[in-house]
Amino acid sequence: MSITFVLKDGTKKVVTFEEGQTVLQVAEKSRIKLNSNCEGFGVCGGCHVKIENLLDKLPEISEKEDDTLDKVSGVGMNSRLACQVVLNSSLDGLVVKLV
Ligand code: FES
Image (tube, rainbow, N blue to C red; front, side, top):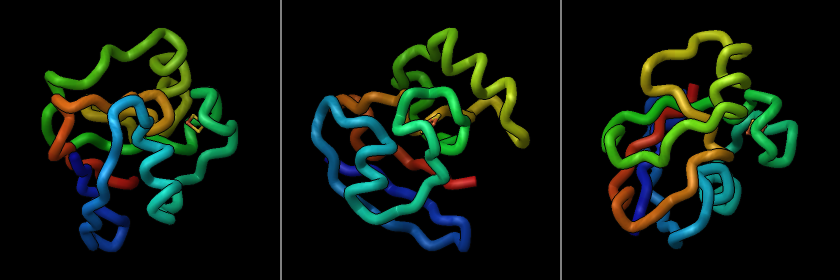
């Protein structure tokens, strides 16, 4: 299973993932830098990404994630925190854009 990250310069990087990993963990293992400052606890907002497809397959947004996104600038309808999106097989082929 794989995710495509779209980097800030538009470069695409395809990386594999295992079920149960978060988007942040997959990015870090692939040396893709997100500005995560809370070690994945969902409170800093630094891992803000935009999901480009499969939006209906994403796990529901929690109250904590929603509260944190409220404090982040540039948030859109497809914004998520990479540390809060736990991957499963239905998210194979996910496209994640860094912002
Ligand atoms: S790493 Fe801080 S909100 Fe995701």
